[in-house]
Image 1 (cartoon, each protein chain N blue to C red):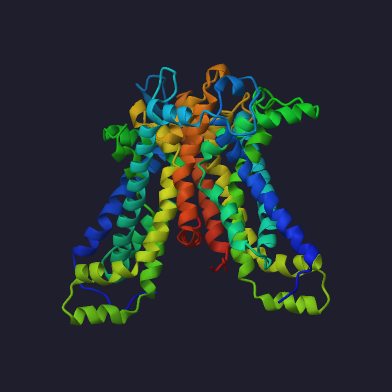
Image 2: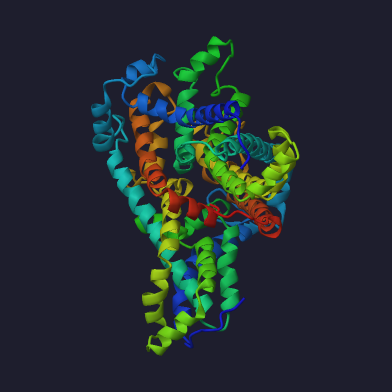
Length: 293
Length: 282
């Protein structure tokens, strides 16, 4: 698609794209290229000499059980966060889509957690479920649960998933609500006239018509769980206890920062880059978004 | 209209209120904790009702900071966050709208390659190029500066795409009319296109401001000086690994202050927020 009416100018368009182009080349492409190059290099501890080692950084990574664990963990986190957050948000959206009094108020009261930053989410949840002083930990211990997410890896993982899913409820809710409102009401009426009960109406009419939204949100939630959980993890568990909450992004960060293993960190970055490209590709290729607001 | 029976309607109300309670509970606890005495909280004796230390805790948080060695008033952190968020939001909108203008309203060599170069940055989030980007910013002597905080995040494929899409829907007659009036490309942009884009810009601003305010990984990397910390980074440093030293009321007050501006934006500008969110899918 192209505009018919345009301006004639030789230099002006270049001047207009120059700022964005400069930033993109300096801060996006150059570092990305550096990451690719670095992933093929081995640097000694003092950065004095580097040697070209082909795919050794990658081979080393894939022979490292810790990296496998991080991959599996990241996918598990993504899946758990997406499923729990999406199902809860869908339930709320279906309720809020009904012709209820005060539905605007409900929407307002459900969408604001979108604005809470991941590190703050982490702080809020670790405080509530802190082993020694958390207000919810009291009840958990009262119920006989030996609750200590700072020592128990599974509990730490559960905490991360819970907090991350909590933050994402509002986003999912909003898109589900938009998706529901885009479904013509006459479809429900027809189903009701045919004698379908509400639960049956939901599974045979609403759910299939909502599938583009569900698929879109699934991709968005996976991307969210991959990248935006960094702040939550960093304030809650810092990857611990042990490495039980280290995701791929968190591993890139700690390996480069503390370990100083830049070659491996760069190789991990490149692998992540490939994953983002695939996810973005899926989003643009297959997600036909029919949300109107 | 499919009639809802009375009982089902009550169930819907109940489920929504339970949902709201779940969503609000962590924040309620934070607000309550920020008004209580630290000793009580540290003992695990925190009350679920507000305490009487509201003014002293918030005064200390905003103007003094924690009592530890790295004390830094949270008011200053909020200022840093505000400057960063505004620079990111305004910067992204400004450079995206002019590049979209060039791409839609001009024909020039490398027009489409340039468009693709911008578009592909969607696939290069900061997380996948952490250390090389850090190195460039360090080489440019921009560590611990507002420029370093904002500049590397200012490119926006999403905003460029949105403005491009919007410009495509602007009728050609407008350009022809303003050309008859003798307006050149810059005049047309300033007098016609920019006023038309106002709602788009506002919706985008709301989302980008929230995203900017909530940045974490990048400021964490490039700020080393305490007085350049943003609030998101500052709050993390307040939680010491030795729990006994963490001043929880101050931490919770900081959490509340960190939430306040973006949550206010969402609630006060709800229509723009929803529109921006649906358009950018961020």
